[in-house]
Image 1 (cartoon, helix red, strand yellow):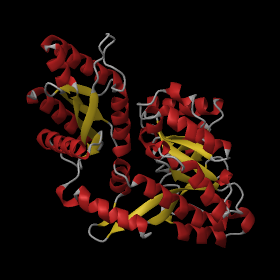
Image 2 (spheres, helix red, strand yellow):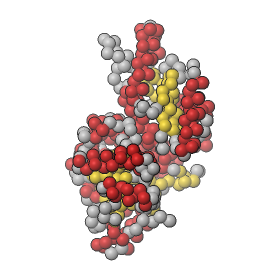
Image 3 (cartoon, helix red, strand yellow):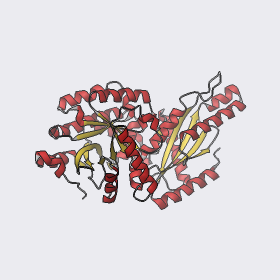
Image 4 (cartoon, one colour):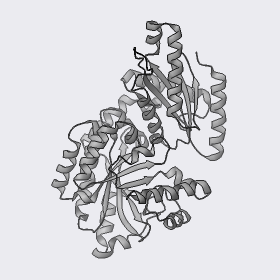
Length: 425
């Protein structure tokens, strides 16, 4: 049984800190399948050793600021501060999954465990310990029901079965919309490219946040269809601008599509159809790819880069991926996570860290994009550090791709990128 008192007290403390700082955190319930089998096969003593080993593996996989509690014979509860959105928590979940890929012991008879997780986020999934733990448990039950390794809590009014069918239909019938968010050159003060983003208005629920439907697609069989839609929707709007010098189009790729055959050919075929050169495309992958299936990701990304496609590592700096992985990646660009950019104005140590990342990236021949630039002071700080590019509401909000294309084409050909100013309305 869960020892609720210390866990609930820690969650309540974290909730008070998060409320004061307007930040977020995650509560994760982890069930390690296989521990009970070890007890039944080898006895209680070895079962207890396996449980302790599982706890150690979990603690080694999370950050020093994270908290780990026993929540039962085969279960653990985690508190992960600073989780601004689901992608951050996904990095932690992926790292935990990898921790149990090898046997937990070094004996002649291997002990195997399998981590399954349910995740609830403060404040959207609850503001007190009881609600967050219950919702994390509900998400765990859903992950086990679907046979997945993790699941985020889904409110009752957005049941996954309903969303799944409607989202699938929206993708199949091309009822999603492509939005472009400008990426600006901080040194030359011009638009250097865009990031392509998907938007969805559900007939049942209205506007659905990408923070909800994209992670859901990643957890289901819809991510390949969503990626295929994103590639073609982006290139359809990029085609009229293919003559613009140096303008790039970033497309997000889930690491889950790397395990499926044909993704490279799919992108190359689409580029041929729309007449867009590979050098105009940047494939964005999150740090999750660094800690998920490394070898598979490396093979796919290397093939893309060999064909001229740029490779950007998104959300860098959240703390779960080792810098050692970075040297193995065929990356051309690194995007510093907005959580670091948001804090660097008021925190000297964070500013030093951002400067160090910029310098490190340049030494590795990587260009640097700062995410979440929300004011002029931050933009000036980044420009002074030598940061190459910036992205954020201060520099340009996401807008319908067709509107961006129309505005860009209306400018004089040779100076369109310089004249296309940020739209901060």
